[in-house]
Amino acid sequence: MRGRHVFMQSLVKHGVRHIFGNPGTTESPLIDSLPEYPQIDYIVALHEGVALGAASFYAQATGRTGVVNLHVAPGLGNALGMLYGALKASSPLVVTAGQQDTRMRLREPLLGHDLVAMAAPVTKWSVQAERADELGPLLRRAFKIASDPPAGPVFVSLPIDVMGQETAIESVGPGTLFRAALPDPAGIAEIVRLLLASRQPAIVAGDDVARADATQALVALAEAVGAPVWVEGLRHHVSFPTAHPNARGALPFDAAAIRKALDGADLVLLAGGPFFEEVWFAAGDPFPEGAAVVQLEESHERLAFNFAPRAGLVGQMHHTLRALHDGIVSAADEAFRSAAARRNVALKSAREADVAAQRVRAGKAWNRTPISMPRAMAEIRAALPANAVVVDEAITANIDLARTFDFERPGDYYSGRGGGIGQGLAGALGVKLAHADRSVVAISGDGSAMYSIQALWTAAHHGLGIVFVILSNREYRVLKHNLDTYRQRFAELANHPYPHMDLASPELGFVHMARGMGVEGTLVSNPDALRGVLEDALKSGRPHLIEVLIEGKR
Image 1 (tube, rainbow, N blue to C red):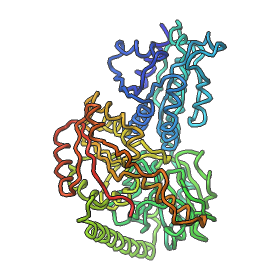
Image 2: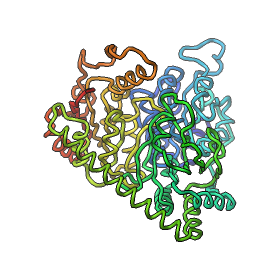
Image 3: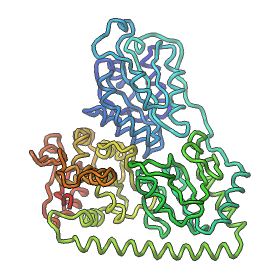
Image 4: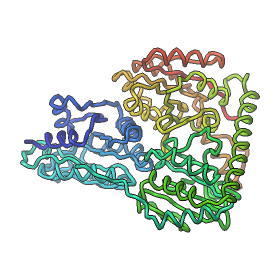
């Protein structure tokens, strides 16, 4: 058999259902093989970054390893930003790119470059297949490394001649792997002891809680100890129900602000994340003085990597959280249970106050034109059916989104990691493929949308009924806020304008762009129209773009 057959059969044996890609000449062996493997769909994108972003969100939404096929050096370069985001998100991906014929290696062929070196900094493993004999074992290893915790992307360079070579070495499947390691009982006992000794515990939940289907186990533990639950500032999933009385929302982006949010805690339990992604420098660590730090991870790599915890434990997240809950329930005395109950009552009151405050905030801004961010979020939420999925890249509207929507379980919400923009529209493609039976709404800022606007064509081409809501304030609003922060932190002049941060000359016409790519579009300038337009778009079952004129920076 030829190398291309080994490649495709490897995908079949690893349960791959989709290849996300943008084809080119060096990808001819793969493209020419597709008719022989009808069980694998090729999701075509007009830009490699869109293909990579869609595959990353697909992997997050399904738990399966996504497969991406890029085109030589420029194509891989186009995808590097999204590949960085996939690495930060711990998305299991096998990313491939066609490479020029190895017999031309010393001739500096057109589009040729060292693909392995290009991909290495943003992948767990980067390698080139040098012979067809390597393809079967190499791909088995690539899928394994991509899925080993913490999961992440790997890169495989596929020279066109290697894909055409004959080989007798067949593809290899993954086998039946049992990865759910049980936590050390001694570690459970020590952390239970620390929790029982705590007077004011706090929990910070990372994405691994959701990926491990451990959300309800975390809820049970939080209730048992009476702890507030925070989530990371940038998160991909719902790791804790946002309407739960113990939910406190997202942490900020510098150590001092995180420390202030956690103020009063004498124990901070970190569960399943890289902790923390900061934007601004602040002296000190992010924990209140004297607080004990406890860390739960699914990989040895992350445990105690950034901080020295009082106790750290590696184990499958669901088993670990459940074991801690059971340990607390069996060992807690009446005094601890009473104190936990009082803390839960206080947290419920704080949550109710937050909900009331958001209603007041929305009410004060309700009649603004263009529509205010809190009202826009309220109208969007009111229009969504109960089973809708939100893909979030709202950026400066994200705070109002988080305070307005109730996300109950993993699969209700997806967002990007790493901070690179443009992930929302591309990611929605992968989310819709994963949740074909649910309504999917992507909410994006206008600046972010322009990074991956080609995703609209892919949605139309493959009939993916996504509603894209573009919040159009004609500016890079987040950069204006960040420039204000920079000026304050570094004592710079505060009366300067915001150079090159407006998108109004010329204005971006998203409805026209959408129609040019086969997607119907509607411009909403009247705040009273938003809900009805969104409801109609969702009922159509077809891809639709809604451009919402929204207030700018005040």
